[in-house]
Image (cartoon, rainbow, N blue to C red; front, side, top):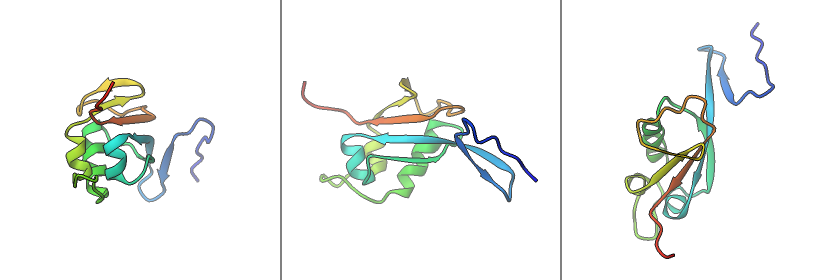
Length: 107
């Protein structure tokens, strides 16, 4: 029998593999929101931000009004991991939130 402490547990447990995966909440803004078709989602966190971005780009087939796919939008975005600027190589170990920020116009 496997006992999992449910207090402060932010992950999923796969009973077949015995692997516990951290969960990360992704928040999409502006064009990223349009292409993803939703404002946020929660998913198992891979090792790096780049792996996460590749996964969500492949999972979402929507486009912006200009016809851009989520993958195309992500190529132009800035990312925050738990409120700090992050590049694709950033680790997601222990992270709980990723913000996807496309370029904004205006002032």
